[in-house]
Amino acid sequence: MESMVKKYQQRFRKAGDDIERWANLQSRLILQFRNASSIIERLQVLQDSSNYGSLINVGDIRDAVLTKQMESLQSIFLSMEKTLDEFHGVVLSLGKIQRDGKQMMKVGSNQPSLKQLKQRVGVKPSLADCMDGLMLLHEMHHSEYLLKSSLVSALSALVLKFNSSDLSAIQQLLVDQPNIPKEEVQIIFDIIFAEEIS
Image (cartoon, rainbow, N blue to C red; front, side, top):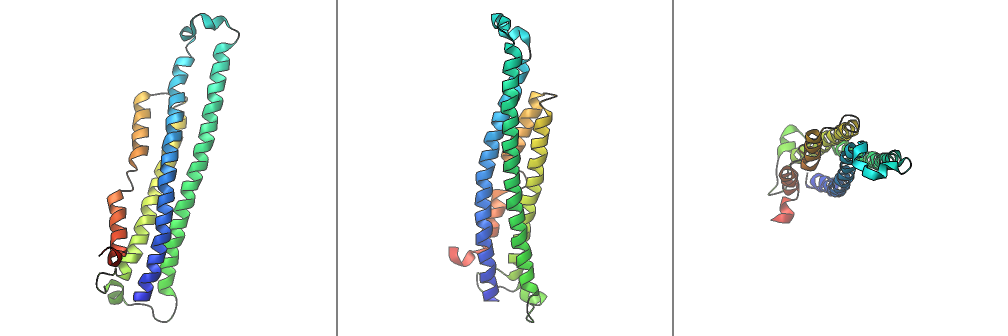
């Protein structure tokens, strides 16, 4: 059992790398989101010809400025899609780690009984703790990825139908990461690596 727990801990170290990557992607997506939001808010002002004053007589200034802003916005949306793809890569990696962990239990003739799965040796986690922890990490990040995808779609819809309160609410949801309570993730890692902490 102890050797199995060590194998699980190796998987959790890999999951920890994925979660660190997730945090970096989160910072990037928030920056991209804020940049896109700024342009969306500006578009409302730029579309109104009265905001150009005497500049309105300079060629097609209004159309040129709007075109440039839309090009910038399109570029940001493409970057956000790439960032979402990387989030999806983290989710797939966590899913693979979870499946590999399940597979470890099925390999060989010494498949643990339910009692053995829940058995603890000192402060070491049980095999059930390990399996449940990997499942929770995958589920939380998968749910959050789906939410992020929805928020990016909602942001692009605001280009056509702007609403500042919707924009603020979407941004707050993105920043909060409501499906990934940091304390819960830390508790999972504390349980798995309890003997290293004590």
